[in-house]
Amino acid sequence: MLTLKGEHIYLRALEPEDLSFIHTIENDESIWEISNTITPYSKYLIKQYLDQAHKDIFEVKQLRLVICNYKHQAMGMIDVFDFDFKNRRAGIGILIKETDDRQKGNGKEALQLLTSYCFKHLDLHQLYCNISEDNTASLALFKNQGFKEIGLKKDWNYLNGQYKNEYLFQLINTNVY
Image 1 (cartoon, one colour):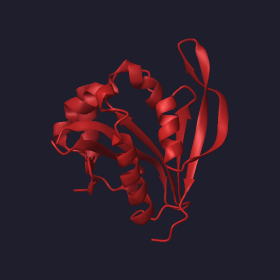
Image 2: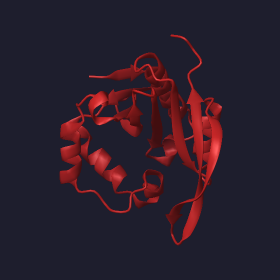
Image 3: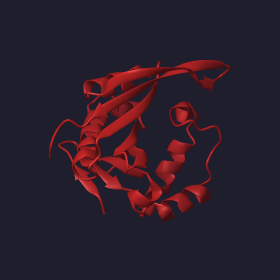
């Protein structure tokens, strides 16, 4: 089982016990914009997903980890998606569920842990992320961690009757591990 440990939080692999936590997150309409979701997920579908979560990133092209505090409480999730080993790149996304757990360094530490894992263990050359223009917290987080804005996708997402722009950020691995 994969566990990445930081000072205040750790990242761990998904477990069957995460069903209710993931179900709550995936069905929270307030965050559907982040995940481009437009319909709710049943517990049945999430259970099927969890049953497959043990598969290798090289097979399924994604990795989802749970962000936990040292009281072993799930706080959020962080994902590697569109894993492309040939070109040594992947997308990355993060969500801290409760607003009380945000702006306290948890996302920063989780992003640092996963970035290090991707560069050192998955041998990736670059990571990228897509962030809505009005998601100021994520924009600040990724900029603070060295991600560079490389483009603006105009009218990219349609939400509540209007189009929103989305930034594309990239982090190139310049370290030799």
